[in-house]
Image (cartoon, rainbow, N blue to C red; front, side, top):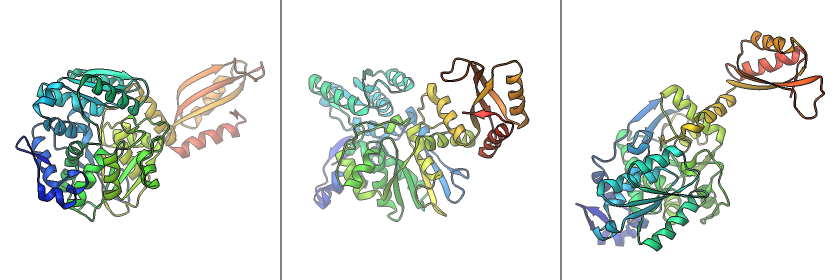
Length: 420
């Protein structure tokens, strides 16, 4: 089954061929999704990068430049276009950490369909407000994505809305698959494609499209270490549910993958790796500094994997899909600080000093002598378990790199300072 000319068609031969490639998905369906999305979703650019991994030929697929700032519009709009008039009139409901919410809200707005979106209360404020700006009603739910999903299903049953799943739906997967089609059209000899995974809708569509167009190309999924639901499920051979998730990459903080996406990943994905919070932060920093590009945590995991050689990329044409750019600006400084500290470009020191005149001046002079630049100083006499004749001075200093940071620490120790 697929959409053609605005109507639902059933291709009997294709259906009997392999139940239409698992879930009635076919390249014909993806081609139709591409047509439906013309004038709605952008064909996002593929940029070459010489900074991400010096041993590989790396490109970045910039879905952070998509309308609404994420790839999610593709699947949401294609799914919405498949609804009958009767279902459309009932209105739609969706659950999302933010990006699917915006995609559904905009798609519904363009069709004049009422939309209700259940979002985790922890969702970035910018994503919540953006969803509201497209005319959707937002219901904030305590917990994470899976809790919002449960609430959406409850309201769907109560009100009769049409539920638009963010990833476990063949139309959504087909819409996301247009990202893979574009990659192959832009770089037909790509050898490796790295794709973020939350519930699995994006990588399911991308991997399917790529394997049909270039079977030799490897497709790897990337998850946050604190939310490895798909990786664990694939390794165990069955769908599992995490007890909790914890990651700055809110867009992929999913406890349990979908049934359809799990099957798709089993069949078409070559492997799944994870990246740490520090590695994600460093990827965000690199994209900002070197490419003047903003990526959210979920969008940057593919770049993090390439930077850290999570898979063999040496000498290979590699594409990193940056799935979104809707970063929460309220925590962006904390993310960048984490990355700068990891690179030795911010150094935090806690120094024990005698609490008498001139001691702080001497310490600051000693730091200046190393070429470090002091950002902040906190002088604290009220530290528990420290002698009344002493105090703790917390210093935040800008350093050039890890070597410079270590030089600063060793210089202070050589001068007799006690560091905690």
